[in-house]
Amino acid sequence: MRRLPPVLIEDGCSRELLSLIRTILAACKEISFRVGQGALSGVLGSTLDENIQGETQKKLDVLSNQLLKDILLESGYVKAIASEEEDFTVAGNPDAEYIVAFDPLDGSSNTDINSLVGTIFSIMRAPKGSDAADPAIFMQPGHQQVAAGYVLYGPCTTLALTIGKGTRIFTLDKTHGSFMLTQEFAKIPEDTKEFAINASNQRHWQPAMQNYISDLLAGETGPRGKNFNMRWIAAMVGDVHRVLCRGGLFTYPADTKDPNKPFKLRLLYEANPMAMLVEQAGGMAHTGDERILDIDPQEIHQRVSVILGSKNEVETCLGYHK
Ligand code: F6P
Ligand code: MN
Image 1 (cartoon, helix red, strand yellow):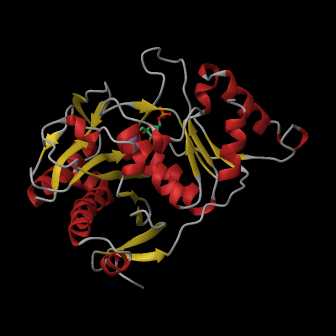
Image 2: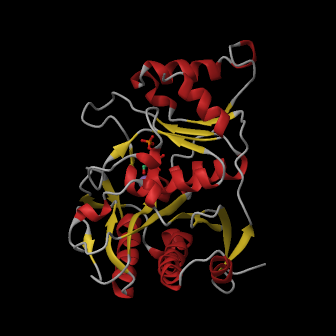
């Protein structure tokens, strides 16, 4: 079994990018340890604070954010960071080549029930001559990401990573702390019989999604002529991992539940990195209107609708949106 550094070097990953990825993973190993200790490390439960997006912060959100932020800024490998748990971007080394956007702990409502959570990250190049304190350096379409990944803290700790040469899966060997390559290239099957959506929002969806899901639910006697199964982990990182492992369609569509918040998932540190991982594994990632990786971001915490996974199934879903 091969360790991560030689695998990435063989793919032509620069020393600087490799060092940056290893820095992120060092923080993730610490998060993995803390998550694994659960109640023993006193990190379960909520803080009294909300983040800028009005979400109550869990203790593990704050801790994971602090670990990533400190290690990245101290490393000198990043020009700036953007995080779900930071109101604004934070400037780092003005001479560094890369910027990183991350969701320190995705699915944090799962922390207190010993269920799946993970860290999602997106790495881009800082534009030449740019100011580290200028948030505009993050306003790049996702197809410009140089690397994207997530670390899933589950029964084992797994890393899905792409530097634009396919999506690979590594497993953390906790006996010596190395991420080992356990799946050379993830390949999402083009067809599927599995979908993931928070069905409790059904009455708030738009007609296209209403019609699509109702045809899936109609099963073999309906227009699709086959039975579908449903899964919902309530952590995008867990749902996308299942899609990478065995295919499926995952969606968090637009809804009218809160008129000020038509979309749930954030573009820069949720949709974009996941879209890159999924496309690099042969899948598709779309909003219903456009390819996620082609969106020009307007703000750091911008939200989008997401439809991703098995290529043929995403295309079928998009057919309802035309
Ligand atoms: O980060 C947002 C998130 O936690 C995703 O990981 C997940 O898919 C979604 O929210 C679940 O939210 P809800 O339970 O409100 O549908
Ligand atoms: Mn999240």
